[in-house]
Image 1: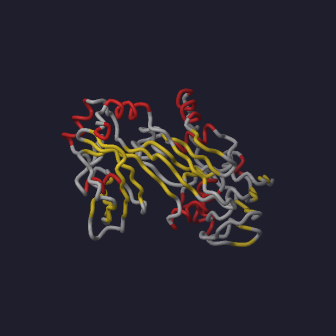
Image 2 (image 1 turned 135 degrees about the vertical axis):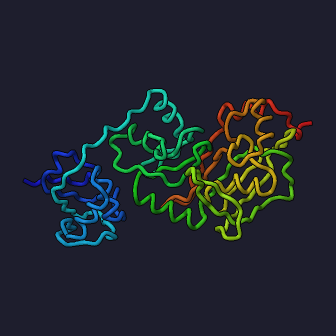
Image 3 (image 1 turned 30 degrees about the horizontal axis):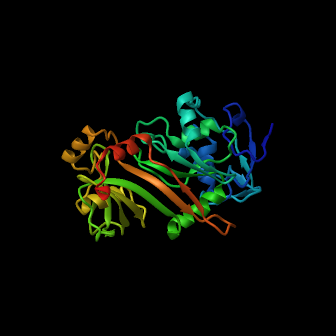
Length: 330
């Protein structure tokens, strides 16, 4: 008995996998490696088993054998052999309050792209003790969406603009733009001290390492990767400066470590911040990292003008700024 799955590319139930199945590839999965496709499609099947059926030729594309690195094309017909899988866990639900918050945080959407103003405290994806992140929430909220993938990352405590591709072709396009440096990303950060006007660029290589606890830490090192951030002063306050940061490269914790490197660590940063300054501003009402992805300027395929999206500061961060003495107005 043959189960014909046309164009879905979605995981099958355990019962359906007891027979040979066929999947026709649509644009949503075109360009993806066959091994990565099968790992997602055959949820519950160990990776070693997936690679075994590929090596043995039990998986066929257009009736022919393929290797694990084969990239799928729209219209490809995949034959998947009968395979036993473990019982899948039921996906977690999304609370009404979280669903309402995320829906209200959507800044832009068309048939190719979502841009969300991610709340601080929400990881972009699950893992490392986090059961559910932004991408998992969106997939639960959009059960009929054939493709939803993060284009880039934001730290859990960082708020602001994050892109989610709704088509694999869009994901490939945006990844190319990120590599070429044609996507303009601007952040707002509140740093301790008086940032000097002359300090406009920080060019310092960054090296990432993992501690025994599993925590990721980044520091400036000549052995690190080239990293550049442009900074501009927005407002000056007593004992703090609001700066705009434009990362030219895209390294982990780049803005936070570059600001620390030149002596003006971000406020509310419990990993790289100055403890005394963080304590002072916590008493003023700052309960989180003051780092916000404020805007994006993104080239769009087949369009003359780039997409421009901005995200306002959250109420708590704006309230903090309003409570501080703005020296530029004195």
